[in-house]
Length: 558
Image (cartoon, rainbow, N blue to C red; front, side, top):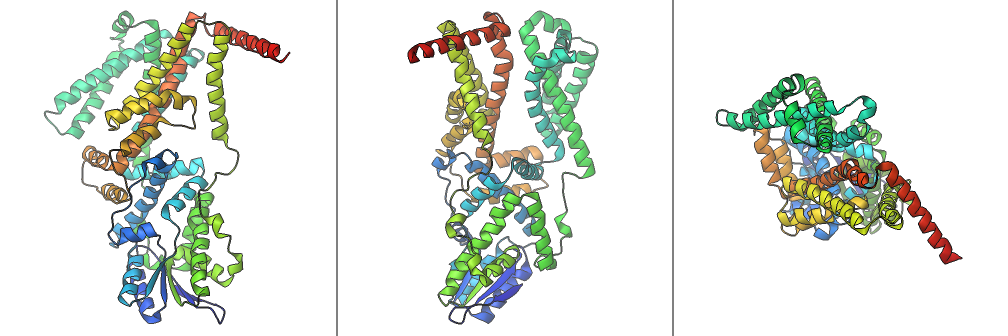
């Protein structure tokens, strides 16, 4: 689809070709238009990095220092999600994504015509895209990618497990109000121990007879059956639990067992429902008619649907790039050049409007650089309050005369719990020992300040040994479309891709730190508080510490 934009007599002329990036018809139209027009310049919707990648050059590696800016990994995830959708469409219709731009470049070079790269740097666009999206929108996009990696049942299981880890401490604190007694904790801990132990044994025995996937299923089924029958129903494990564990350990293990088992059951049920109803598959893109993808009305509907899903994301991905592309094309036209501009069909209308009314273009500096998040910075406010609260807790107890040895032991427990969980989760995700150790060592500090994350530091260490670049996304997209490889083997192949392993290491380190903080506040802190006389005594000491501090400050002022 193309159109000729009007221009002043002393200016050049522009013909805009709107393409579908995975359409074979678009490739032919691009080639035919350039050969017929023979312009001075062919302007393509590419930036320098994507152009070099299209020419077969190795993409730039990710600079390790960028990881400490906080959102680099999330931006790669956003880029991956967008490219995955485009790769799926290209695979369905047997056209390589970006074939239209490649055809424009190759045709121009064959005819000796200059090529102008007029798009904004992809990293800038993705950063601004991520910053403009709301929290719920990010979750929805991430969910779409997760369902591409595996099915809804596995997603439900993993989410249920995470929810259960968080719910366990709350059950320990508020379980009494819900009628959860010590006997319930005993039964839950015994059932969980029996289920896990028997499940591992059954899976190990079954692995000699059937494949890995079937042995895992056998272990899950057998462990669950024994836990429900022998533990929960008959209480066979109650005497063992009561004679082996202390009351505190029973409360900790029982509450975690209740939280995790409840979360897993609900998650699995939700996953089976979604898988049975097809809710995890979304719309079937095979139903799309490629001949209609460049039709103005259809493209407009697609853009509006995306705008309804994410107004902020659409602003960065569509509106800002319309203006950026138009800025560069107008500059070419103002130099008297005749231009064929090859852009995605979704940008054509916006660009043509700016070509007709260039005075409406926003300033170029407003379209570049790092985007600032809008609205009240609640994350920074909450982070500051948490940091202040943590420091105030120790300071007030010290001012109340609590022994230094007690405070050091309390801090040591905080340090160890955060370090073990953050480092352990990082190692489970495939991190090197050095990376997991660094993540564990800084976890106590990052837990105090939620604006920091131990995963950043773990990822930084990983990037000292492993190069991560945009090419990894192509490999991940290939794996996501593999419907024949068993899930266990497929996940192993995905962990072999540096980008995926980096994402998992960063995420799991942060999750470990969050779990550790919850466990510390719920279980460890009350244990230490008991030495001071319980929660009421701790509160009185903090109040006394505040009074002592106020008296000292008043004395200094007076």
